[in-house]
Amino acid sequence: MDWGLRNRLSRILRPEDGRSVMLAADHGYFLGPTHRLEDPRQTLLPLLPFADALMVTRGVVRNCVDAGTQVPLVLRVSGGSTVVGADLANETIITAMHDAVRLNASAVAVSVFVGSQYEHQTLRNLARLVDRGTEVGIPVLAVTAVGKELEKRDARYLALCCRIAAEFGAHFVKTYFCDGFEEVVAGCPVPVVIAGGPKSGTERDALRTAFRAIREGAAGVDMGRNVWQSDHPVPMIRALRAIVHEGATDEDAFALFTRLKQPGHLQPV
Ligand code: R5P
Image 1 (cartoon, protein in one colour):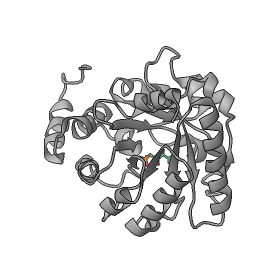
Image 2 (cartoon, protein in one colour):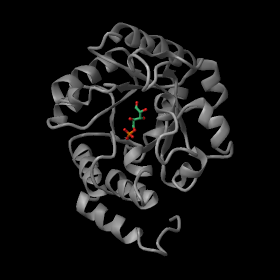
Image 3 (cartoon, rainbow, N blue to C red):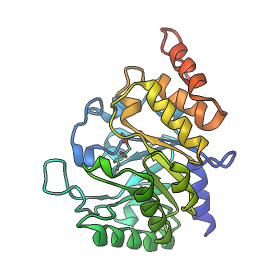
């Protein structure tokens, strides 16, 4: 791995512990103005001081993120299908690698839809991106996407997806947490971070998921809706940081969340 690529990766997966709290906010590329991400600038601004990396599209970078930001960007570069279209899996590469370079991206992200009608196409997207990323020193994050088929998220399937993504050259992989997650990590030779998925439970549930994922070998989280759809997004991302970087249990983290959400406790550290 070339120096520049390793250096970029180390901006995301912190060299102190090899872990990351990534903030996912790329949902608009297929969901449009997602609840509480209608105005990305307003949503993201208070959260950026607590994010190790920000995952967004180039449209959001250029229009909603200050160019003076010190937060490393993970640029979403696959897309082409929407929630109202025929099939979310029908993705192509929507952003040229030289534009990722121009935006000073620390990584690029591409979804693969293993087992779908578009398996071959999306795996080719990944392969091409790894080739182009390697040329310019930009690491690739493969996202093991399932579209609307959330029931697919079991250890056997996700282990298959993560391993294939790594075999194709992805430098790190984003997947879902599941029962038997250790098996997913054990079969994947590159770091694995977890997505949060739709915000269906409480903050405590999401913190529990993050804690279990870290305990079972995840290199971090790349959560979106469970952070910015919370009524208390800043306490939530700070509680996630405590789990990922400070060895907090989910109980410790929930106690921190509860304390920080009280008025007067929101100042940046
Ligand atoms: C994945 O492909 C999406 O674009 C999001 O980045 C991902 O789902 C993570 O966000 P959330 O935690 O809201 O699921």
